[in-house]
Image 1 (tube, rainbow, N blue to C red):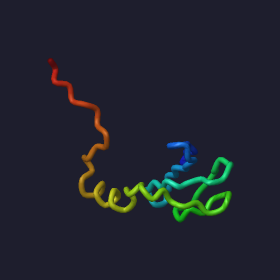
Image 2 (cartoon, rainbow, N blue to C red):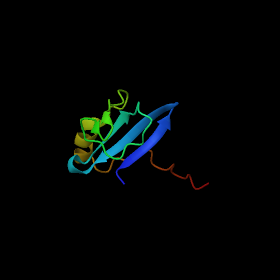
Image 3 (cartoon, rainbow, N blue to C red):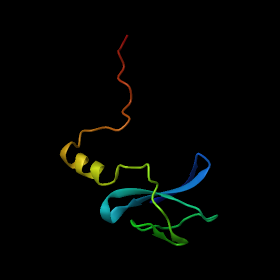
Image 4 (cartoon, helix red, strand yellow):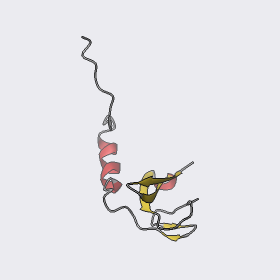
Length: 82
């Protein structure tokens, strides 16, 4: 699906792919519930979630990707063939 519920550093987070915006958002989940859906602004099935403030990819990555589609994130190491 488009939602990943996870724990990072002991804190619950939700990673959501927003198909309509072709964007990814990451939100803190202070509830004891798994999140089934979340809108881009953070509204979800258990209230409103705050964005993870250290994830800064938002609009910048979308713009970069449009101009430099060959950019790879964490590409595999190139073998030296030795």
